[in-house]
Each structure stands twice: as C-alpha cells, then as structure tokens.
Image 1 (cartoon, rainbow, N blue to C red):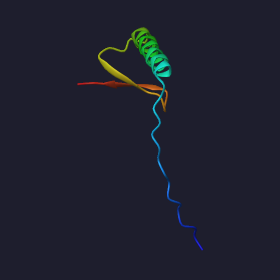
Image 2 (cartoon, helix red, strand yellow):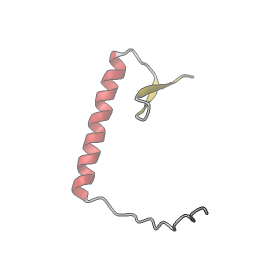
Image 3 (cartoon, helix red, strand yellow):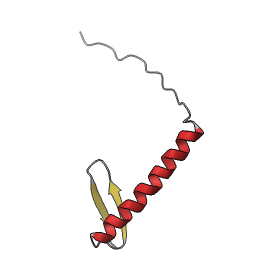
Image 4 (spheres, rainbow, N blue to C red):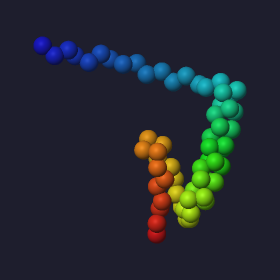
Length: 61
C-alpha cells in the first residue's frame, strides 16, 4: 500500500541584515571575477553563467 504524502508546511525566515550584506558583497565579487574570466576567454556581448552546469551561456542576436 502506497504511503500518502505528508502535508508540508513551508516557512519563510528572513536572513539577518549582516548576512544579507555579506551575501550581496560576495555576489558582486563573483560577478566581477566572472566578468574578468569572460573577457579573458574572449567572450563578447551578453552572457550569463549557469552555475549548475558550470558554463557560460552566451546570448547571440
């Protein structure tokens, strides 16, 4: 007999301001670093990074 899925309660808990500031700063540093990597690889135009697949996604027109 299959088990019925349990009801899941979702809670949203705010991140403390100190942690938010560190996360924002780390994200900006990562963006700057990746911009340098993209420039070094010769990637021009619009691009984004797929962190799950660890690759640049270049948007061409």
